[in-house]
Structure formats: structure tokens, C-alpha cells
Length: 421
Image 1 (cartoon, helix red, strand yellow):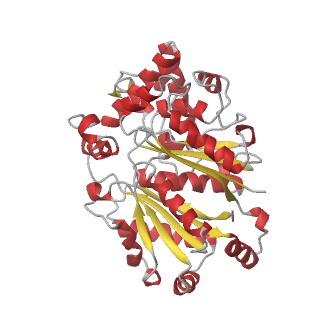
Image 2: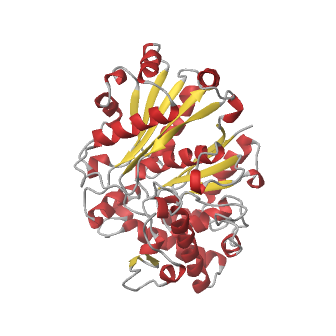
């Protein structure tokens, strides 16, 4: 199979509140695309030339613009950015919090089929248009709304608290130790975010003590066992990447005085869906060592396709929508045996200084979680790490990296491995 290279991209500053700035969805599209073109040294004239040849496409990941903005049909918004996008094939892709990854997946497929030479993938979400309670209701549509979210103020904190409950029960864990491990995950992600100049919480305060102080004014409970420190943020933001065919990547390198060996490419991927409802997932996994059975299978698929193992990975970007989801993901990634995720946390393995850093960017908890953009942002951060462009949060000698992006209560599971030769 031919390779798909990542040429680079850009991320907006996740600290921003676009509504307060008086800026629209069109403005967010325009900024992220123009910034992405500049960062990769790709011109609008180049896009126009490829458009005439029908060798370029655009893929937009977005979850809930109909709710937050009363706006659908996001694939057409590129025509509002520049008339060079007139006629260019573009569509919107949705898979809850994995919307960005399904857009990436579609772009990869088009390039591998040799239909396109270049793909522009944008993940985008404006969420600060409503209050937190209404936002929670909108996010509830990523579950089975009628059965799991209707009439509940914050459905997903409650669902991922049920994941915490199920983890404790399945593996017979001591509750205080488990909750302290969740607090450590929160502290690690907040600490990592301070190195990231575009992380939402880079100027926030979170200590280990505060993360443990649940049920207090400084760390109130949001749903079940989980408190504010355990939750990712409501975020406005966008991220974009350019993906390219082998032929285009070679020509791109010649134009920019690069060696093809300097460009990261997608080495492996996995996509698996679990049952929609959380209770169905738990019921199905009763006799399986992994609580999130299909998440583990998606990870294994990526390892198999890449010909690599967990030992080959230098870092991970994972879907820490809640601390309980990151905890469960650690065994799925192969960092520990199922039920012994605490070993990776208590040993320091997953810290920035550890042997297998998890979320050096700050992840979703520290970095921010504009739902439709998170998968694209993860791939962009893998690119930055492997290309040695991550700045203050660069992991030393990063050659291979994996991302895990989930939608719903680990219903849609996407993994990608990025690396160089």
C-alpha cells in the first residue's frame, strides 16, 4: 500500500472565546486554513492548480454545529474562505468526539485510492455559544440520548463516572487509590499544558492536592465520582493538517529543500465500534480482560498494520475526555496489563519525563476539547513530535507516536500511528 504523508498543519489558540471576539464560524475557518497554508508553505495557487486537475479534496470534522450554531453543511464553508475552493470536493464528517478522526480516515482512503494527491483536513467546533448546562445536553446526543441523556444535566460526566465504577468493580481496586490515580492523571495533563502555547489551561492552576479535593468549592463534583478536575474543557477551536500522496510528498520536499525521510507518514490505523450504550459495553466485556474491548482491538489493529509494538512508541496522545477514560486507555495501549493501569501512573511512566509520555500536549483535559477538532489536533501533535517541531513540549528523539480518539462512551474508536523511517 502507498504511504500517506503528513505535511504539517496548524491549531488555533484553544484559550480563545470566539463569540466574545465577535467572530463567526467563517472567521474560524478562514484563520485556521490561512495559518495552515502559511505553516506548510502551500499557496492558494497550488490549491487552485490541483483543483483544476481534481486532485485535491477537503474533509471537515465537526460534531454539533447544528446545535451550537444552528448551522449544518459545514463542508461548503471553505467557499466562504477563498474562491479557490469553488468546485473543490468537500464534505463534513461526524462521529461524536471522533469526528476529526473519521475525516482523517476518509482523506487517507481517497489518497490511497490515488484519487487525490493532497487532502486538507479541518476539525472545528464552537462550543462557547451556550451555557454549560445546555452544552451538556448537546453533548448528550453522542450517547443514546433517549436512554442515557434525556433529563440528565451532564450526561457524559455521569457516563464516565460509571466507567470509573465499572473499573473499580471489575478489577477489585481500592477506591481511594483509584481516585488518587485519577487525580494524578489530571495533574499530569494540566502540568503538560503549561508547556503548550496553544493549550486552553496553560495559565490555570491545578495542583495534586486540589485534584484530590473533590466535593469542595475548589473542585466540585460534576457527575457521580468525577469532579471538575476530572473533566475536559468546553472549548472553541480548530485544527487542520495536510495529507499527501507519496508522489506529491516527494515533489513537496524538492520544492522546500527537504528530504522525504524528514516527513512523517501514517504507518498504521484502527477503527472499531463498540455497542452504543454504556451498559451494553460493560455487559459484553464481562468475560474479556479489557473493560473497553473494542478500544483495545482498534489499538491492536494499528500496531499490526504498522508492524510496530508498544515498545516502539515514544509517546501517545489519548482521549482524556475524563480522567477515567485515560485510565482505562493505558492497558488498551499496551502500557500495562488490564487491571494494572495504576502501575503506569504510580511509576511515572506516563509523565512528560517518563519513558512513555501520555498527552505531552496537555491532552483534552489540559489542552482543550473542541469536540470535532480533537482527532485532527491529536494527529497534528503527533506530526509535531515526530518532526521535532513541538517546541517546549517536545519529547526527545520521538520517532513513532500513537493517538487514540474515541467518540461517545468509547463507542467509536480510532487509532493512528505516525512515524518516520
